[in-house]
Image (cartoon, rainbow, N blue to C red; front, top):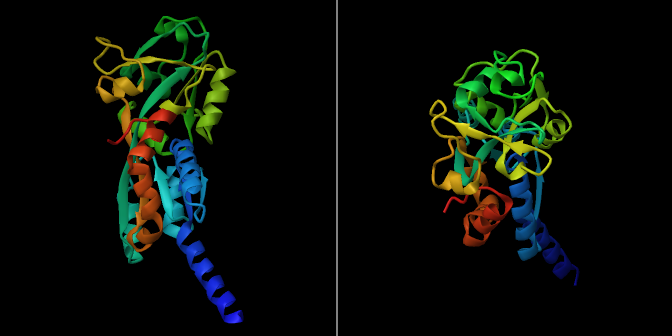
Length: 271
């Protein structure tokens, strides 16, 4: 009897080791990972998946340190990060799990509806400081940004600011939800968030990347038909030596059921 109990305990511990996994990183990807994990665990009661945010850089650092199984990221892994992993004898696997349209949001009372990329660059680099310069009220512009560990911070800098530096003293927020909350309470506020975070407490802006000829609203449909310009892939990173543990969940996200959740939450499906 004791032998049977011992074998059962060993088998249960093996199931636990195989099934328990941690996902950490991007706050943009966070609601998607949480929803996917919740649904996966309902189908696989033996699985235990914990999901936390903190930013893409935080997730990739945790992968480097071996404290997470999957790094969720809204930017590509950097060359030096990949090199650090390789120096430990590990090879990283990159999987695109969804796409995201990055939306620029303002306070609902703000009358400004359209902005060009150049105007956004001017705002976030500190050259444009009053809404009247954009056809709005005589009111100070208060830009909100994600912190430097965020993949969204880096993607916005690359795509919208064309790699120019953010203005000194910009309001740096620790999470996307904090940007939404701040702008909903600040009439002169402006910031950028993943499409899935938009709610009635903020207003999204139509964006032009052709110097004002056409302005397009951020939406799943406009991202799919490629008329909205600020679209990026969302990634999972894991090490090949850990593939046995993470692949069943990653495969679930890429399945028809998993991709249906991608659409439901407000992201763009991979397929």
